[in-house]
Structures are given as C-alpha cells and as structure tokens.
Amino acid sequence: MNDKLIIFDTTLRDGEQSPGATMNKDEKVMIARALEKMRVDIIEAGFPIASPGDFEAVKAVAQTITESVVCGLARTSDADIDSAGEALKPAAQARIHTFIATSPIHMQHKLRMTSDEVVSTAVKAVKRASKYTDNIEFSPEDAGRSEIDFLCKVIESVIDAGAKTINVPDTVGYSMPHQFGETIKQLIERIPNSDKAVFSVHCHNDLGLAVSNSLAAVLNGARQVECTINGLGERAGNAALEEIVMAVRTRKDVFECDTGIDTTEIVNCSRLVSNITGFSVQPNKAIVGANAFAHESGIHQDGVIKSRETYEIMKAEDVGWNTNRLVLGKHSGRNAFKTRLKELGFEFHSEEELNESFKNFKDLADKKHEIFDEDLQALVTDSLHDTSYERIKFISLKVNTETGEVPAAEITLSVDGNEINKQSTGDGPVDAVFKAIESALDSGCELLLYSVNSITGGTDSQGEVTVRMSKNGRMVNGRGADTDIIAASAKAYINGLNRVMGVDVREHPQL
Ligand code: KIV
Ligand code: ZN
Image 1 (cartoon, rainbow, N blue to C red):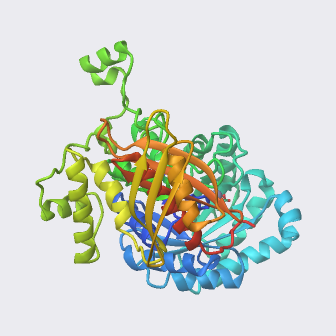
Image 2: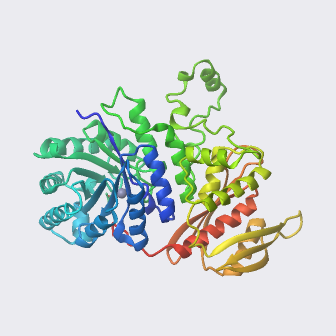
Image 3: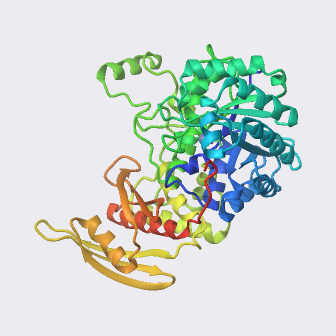
C-alpha cells in the first residue's frame, strides 16, 4: 500500500467561499507561500473563471510557487477549462480540477441532465483539460449522496479519459464515517481501472464530521485529503488540515501512511490565514486554538510537570507553538526585523515596503515593550499587501470618554486622496467612532459582527478587532490591530469598507 498521504489544500478556493473570507491577489500569494513552506503537496489557488480578480490571483500564485503543484478549479464547460488552463500556464507544476454533480437531486434540479449526459460531459471536460496538463483531477460533486453504481460508471469513464486523481466530495457534509469509508473501499474495489488513479476525499463539516469522514476514507485506501487551514470553508467549513495531518502523524499505529508536511509551520500558517480572513480561531480549537496545549486543572498541571505524556499526546513545539519567544524590541535594527519576518515566511517586495513596515514596527515598539511573533504577523499582514485599491485611509483619531458623559469621537480620514474630518457621539466610544466614519462616507453597509481579541497576553497587548459587514448581499470581514482597541476598531471598520468597495462580482462554482 502507498504510504504517502497527499495533502491538497483548498484554503484559497473552498476556504475563500466562506462568506466574508474573500482575499485579494497579494493575500493569496502570501498564504500560498506559507503553504509551500509547510510542504503542502497541492495548492488549489482559486476558480479562474469566477472573475478577472480570481484569474489574476491564480496566475500570480502559479508564477510564485515552485515546490507545490498549483491547481485551478473548473466546471465542465470549455470556457471554465480554458480559463483554468490559461491561468495556470506559468506554473512549474499545474493541475486542473474539474467537477460535475452526480447525485440524483443535483442532476435533476440543478443540472437538469440525464445520467448519460453527465458521464459524457465529464469525459469531454477531462479530455479538454488534457490539452493543458496531464495532471487532471475529477470530482463527482455531491458524491456523498450519489448512487454507488453510477459513481463507479462515471469514475471509470473519466479515468479512461485521463483523470489521474479522483476526488470524492461529501459536498453537503451528510455522510457518516463508517458509510463514507465503505464507499471509498467499494469504489477502489469495484472500479476496474481504479489502480490508475489516486483516490482523494473532500469533506464538509455540516455535521461536525469532516475530519472523521476524511480519516475513515484514508483507512479505506484514500491517499489524498482535501482540507483547509483552520477548517475554513463554505458553511460549516472543510476538514481542517492541521487536524488531519496531526491525527495521521500522532496515530502512526492506526494509519498506514503519513504526509510530507512540516508540522512546525502549522501555527504560523493558521495565524496568517486568520489575520488575513478575519476569521479568528476559537480558543478550544484542536491543534491551533490558544488553549489546545494549556492545562488549567491542578491535577493536569501536576501530571504534565512530572511527565508530559500523562496528559499530552503531541508536543506543542511540533506544531509551532512556543516559538512566540521575545523576538524584537525597541532597539532592534532593520536587519533583525527583516530576518525574523523572513523566518516567518514574509518577503518584502521593495525597500519602501520594508521601510514602511519597519517604521510601523518602531511605532509599536514605542508603545509595547515586548514584541512577539504574533505582533509582527499582525503588523505586516496589514502593511504587506497592495494598498492601491484602498480608497479610504486612516489618519488619526481622538476619543473622549468620561463617566456620566456621552462618548464622542473625532476621526480624520483620507478618502480618494482628500482629507476629511468628522465628529460624532455614540452609545460607547466604538459606536461614536463608527458613526463618525459613517457621517463621512454614508456607506450603506450593515454591521453584522464586531469582536475584539488580544493578540498576546498582558494589558499592553495589541487588540485585534474583526468586523463583518454586508452591502447588497455581499459580505466582507475587516480587521485592524493596535495597542489602542478603539483605534483598532476604526482600522477594522475602514478595512471592511475598503474590501466592500474592492470586491468584484464573481461567480460561485457550485451554482
Ligand atoms: O464540496 C464540493 O463538492 C466542492 C467541489 C468543487 C469539489 O468543493
Ligand atoms: Zn467543497
């Protein structure tokens, strides 16, 4: 049995389908670099036909990444396949992933196609994709609710047509682990040419079973798992990469395979994705949650001090925790700053970018005595991306709060290069700031969520604020970090507004 478990990361594609998780080109490239550093085998960079922005982002990832395979998603139409083929042209190693639904409910209501038409359309798409690459993946969408005999027929046909990876998606997160494992076993046993392809799985988390279903499939012969950092993804998300990788690594006695992932990069990658998307990680999340390795009860602490294995099945440092040592301070120089960021996977594109980030670092070091990796990551995630599309810039903020008085805020912004100053009062200081911004912009956005987290411990920690807002049915997240949480709130709101204005209209692959 093949003992390599291939990790296919779809944070940049299915992860991005999470409402509000839209990423721009620079952000996608930043995450792709971190995934490559972690030795992900395949990076699904996007759905090129969805919009010109998506096409450019897939192309930019293809131009940057050399070690991992870069993949683009395409439905079965010629236009989709050609768009993916074109976007992936610069890739050192490219894969086209094409899919069509195979469940009765999808074929009847969504596609309005007969099962024979679905088979011939799938075969035609695989053949067209082979004009661009011989690395072709095919997915029978909604396989979790498809009939097994029909799945066997479609899959046999697409393997004959040239598909090298067969991905079996539980699109709506409906499967139970024992059933899903059995499906994979049956497919591999019954399809005559199954030995010509790698079997993969792609599970959604609607019933909280995405990781369990994926692992059941691995036990039954699947050798590729599709997953996302922090389990980001459509609705309840996809299987979490960090959980799959660590389950297989920790329980080598159970699994006859292992991944090539450098697990010490997991926490870094998790923080980067969370910073960029504004989806914070719940504290009790396995592997990457702040409490994942924290022991509160006295009995547990005592046990861990005597011997770590009493209550710990993994080492925190093996997944990249405990690396948040004090790295830099007020007196650190540009070189130390640049070197540490390089170790964290951030590259500066120009001297100006380095200078700007270093200035922000010095400003932060003036306010905050100890600068940790988390601080640096939050700082550069804000500054290391293309800001040219941002029409609104934060300049300064004055806030007045006093017991018994109505909170008041005065904000100065630059909007399309023009400086605007507005004042407002509110129920609290944050409300006053948001109202002052709105009195300048009248955006028409609805604020759906506001949350604050501290990036590190201590009262001098930077506060990280996430807002979720929507306009005309489009949802975005905005985030901002600052040692002053009211300023962080203003930055998050402005970041959200810039995103609302920058988001282009895009097609959803599964509609
Ligand atoms: O969930 C799903 O079925 C998908 C396919 C496009 C593979 O994301
Ligand atoms: Zn999916």
